[in-house]
Image 1 (spheres, rainbow, N blue to C red):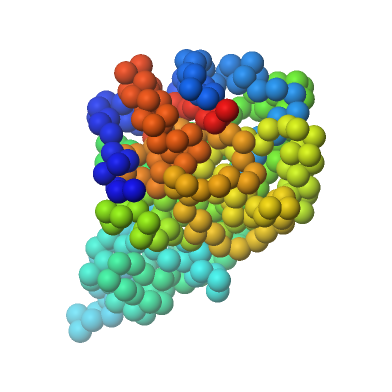
Image 2 (cartoon, rainbow, N blue to C red; image 1 turned 60 degrees about the vertical axis):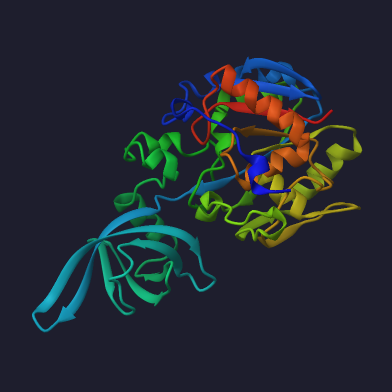
Length: 349
C-alpha cells in the first residue's frame, strides 16, 4: 500500500489544543463491526462486559522541553547563548538523546546550564540531534526536570500555543507511575479514578504494562511505499503478572482491549502463538494492513494524523475501508482530533 492511501482531509479547527473537562466528557465513537454509536467516554461501562480486561500503559511523561544557556570558553572569555532542548530517549548509559535548537552552533564538550540545579554536557553531536550527559540522575534528575522543564506537547499543539502549568496535569494519565516517556499515551488521558472504580465494580479487569513513548512517534512517514518504512524503537516491559492476567482472561473468554496504540504495540510485540509472554526490551513493531493480531481483541484510541503509522495500525485492526468510514463520520460529527481530542473504541467484530 502507498502512503497516499492513508490521507484524509481534516479541518484545522478540529485539532484539539485542550482536553475535554472533565476527562470523561470527551466524545466516544464506539465502532463494533460495521456499526457506529456516538457516545461519551463516561458511557464506557455500558459498552464493556464483565470479564473484559483493559491493558493500560503506565508510563509517566517527563517535562522534557528545556530552555538553557550554552557556555563556551572563547578568546573573549566565557560566552553564553540561549538554546532549546527537547529530550527524545534515554541511552543505556544514562545519557539522553535530544533535539537542540539551534543545533548548528552546539559543539561537543560544551556545557548547557538549565538552572541552578541542572546542567548537561554535550557528549555527541550529529546532523539531527545530540547526546547529553546530565549532572544529576534518578530521582534527582526527575526533580530537577520538574522544576525547569515543561511538558513536551505534540508539534501540532505547540505550533498553536505554548505549554503551561495546566498541561502538567492534562498531559499525564491518572495511573502514570514509571518515568521515561516524552509523549503521553493519549487514549489513557480520558480515564479518571472514578471511572476506573466503576469499571472494576462491574467486573472489568485492568493490567498495566510499560512502553516509554518516544518523540519518534511524531516523525512523519517519508517513504511512499509503506513497506519500506522503518519504525523508531521504544523501550517496553510486560511483567510476569501482566502476561498471566492477560492469558487468563483470554482463556476465560474475556476480551483484551488495549487502551492506546502504545499498549497494543507492546502486547503484540510480546505475543506468541502460545499466548502472551513476559517481555522486556525495545520494540520497533510496525502494525499495518495484513498484520495478524494474536492478543488484542479491541482498541480504545484517539483519532490519528493523516499519513501516520498509527492510522495504518487502526486500519490493520478494522480494515482500511471501515477506518475510512469511521474517520469520515468523525469529521462530519465534529469530533476533536489528536492527542487532546476525543476517543473511539474499535472492535473488529
